[in-house]
Length: 263
Length: 263
Image (cartoon, rainbow over all chains, first blue to last red; front, side, top):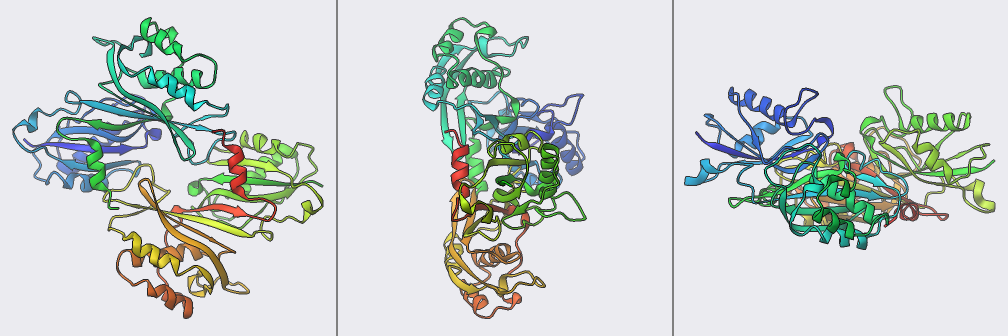
């Protein structure tokens, strides 16, 4: 049975997140509905990971198995005609060769990237409402980057995990961690082996305290060495976070987005 | 009576345009309502020009006269607490000196700038829905810019005016006209002394035919020399157009946005 991989972009504003929840519409559910319309099959859709309510994805990855004879690359076109404008399939394909059915969107992840967008202006913006966090006190980019650099490496991120969430280990590796000016925005880009529940949002909440001058960058080291949740800052709001890129041995979502671009 | 100037940003998606219409909510009306709440006055709000239904503004300018003693720069803060998130005041001020009450948002305009955003990809985008025009055939940027350059100068733009709209003269001066790559987008930036009704959208519709290879750039010259509407292309959709910047002798909206930025 062919295994189809989807690269999915969504604006999280109207959804309770990736995964089906009792209190609203989930992205997984909307795509599952479109797949049912298309194939007549009740399809299990497996993503690279959940995204929370309000969180966006530039490149979420999900896979499913189907008896359908629709050519793999045609799923993107066929689904896009059945999906709302705030969910778009950027590419669909099947992996070639023997390992095809061993690929798993979640378990095969090699590296994940997130972006957190901040608008640092006196007055907020009509265009970034629901997409960036508006902060009206001046941020110090050098301090933000001094804080960001301290996350790089393999650490126990227990202090940067939502209270109550359970995992086998809280040790994770962060490969890159940097704030960059981008037009009107200042954006935090982070990549890692994987992220705990709310980890990026708590990292951002802690760095913002440093960037605003309330704390010194050394609080990052303290929280990495003494992993109590109270050592880290608040959880930054969901609506400014985007799942940016997922890398596997088999492919990188940036390659799929590159193929989608015509210019 | 003090004359207050506002620089206004709005996402046009939920509005029938700047000016009050019978068929929906106008931006002018929403800001007028907030001003009434604030001052108790029924205020006439004069903009640099109307924007059509769905058109956005990064920097619209409007002025009004008031008896209120609210300090001019505080109007922006006070209005923003009373406005929906898709309309933001980026700055408010009064012009100093004798000419203050001779300034008029519309009649004093020296130069206006618009931006038209195009997403040239196989599959559309969740994030640019309602903000950019999705074109899934490959555009040729060199051809777009060859076409754009032909608009520069003083011409009779009668072919680039919505049929039926009446004005004293259809001669306008275009100062700059250029397509630029901008991340995932290709954007058309144009500045001029003023624009006829739908002029930018018809210019874009005509250039897109050139960029797609349907017409040669010389059709621009033909339409400028023989000003029948049928010589130009279709009117490109409103939702990708943004009123970008307005320049006066007294100030430039880019200066106001610069003051709003903290980084």
